[in-house]
View 1 (cartoon, rainbow over the protein chains, first blue to last red):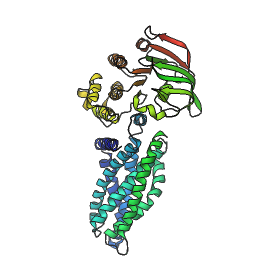
View 2: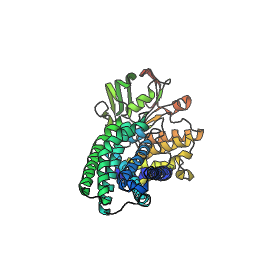
View 3: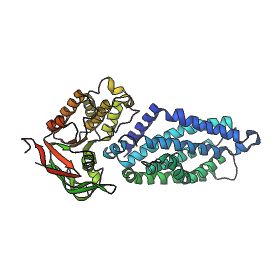
Length: 221
Length: 222
């Protein structure tokens, strides 16, 4: 299973490097939304700085929708789904490989976005261990849920519009937990940042296990 | 001789439509069987059912000793299907595609290299992205992916489609070579004369069933 996961992750990342969708479309989209938030919420009033954590994770979620949609679509065209079913690859391995590839792209994007919010929103950055742990846990949760729901809507004609409708409500706990943990890292008082990070990690594990178990059946659907 | 495919009164549905409506067909190991018939006759469904991709809901269906009604997934690692889709990643090169599908099936690096060479894809074409290839070259790449996996049963849906004469000869030669090494081949084709010459048996399919006796039975198969 792990060997299959590594094989699929390598393939997805190679496809991504060649097509450059993440670099040319997802990253500019994410940065653009950050800038638009800055326009919408006047930086001088302090609202922007206090909402930084929430806005950051919203942008990550919106960008994840694009990354997941892309990850789903590369396996849908021209008989690839059948080829995957016949390949002998363990479905759990395919799932974990796709999660790893999406997570790698999201992690890179998140690092870029941290730099961008530092420049644009001027928050009090700190608590880096908590930030890094939250980013890792939330990224795994978002990627695993995304790949799982990507498989659910795979083959549906209105896949692109259905995916956000299904995915965003499921990811709401991750958004809340990651935002609270980041607020703590940014210096907010009275919040239990590591507790929220733990909650996000719990969701990451649940979605990862559920996806590994369900992906084979979804591939057949 | 050992039966590789055994279908008896097998029914397979596409939605509610019985694409296979009680088909009887046995194929012995080492045979090259051509399925002939009009569009919509059930040829593609039969090939996909043999690969465990279309569920058989009634009758008997065994492929490579695996009961498809009980365990359709059991046969998948051992069959190779060349379907209407190429099964290729457009952004990857020919070599990367063949290597990926070969490694997925635990093929050795030598098998991958040999598949590329046999299909004439080991030169400049190996490093060309699939989205830059012609339809015939894509078909050859798909065939190389199948060949790298060394399946026991080859299921080829219109294997000559989109190919020039030289590539079609190459396909025929590969099929004969695979059979000489112990594989079994079932294919459909509209290339009537060429396909009939390649096949040991020609089976007519219409309305989801095999019609009448075989149209051709080679002397060594009869």
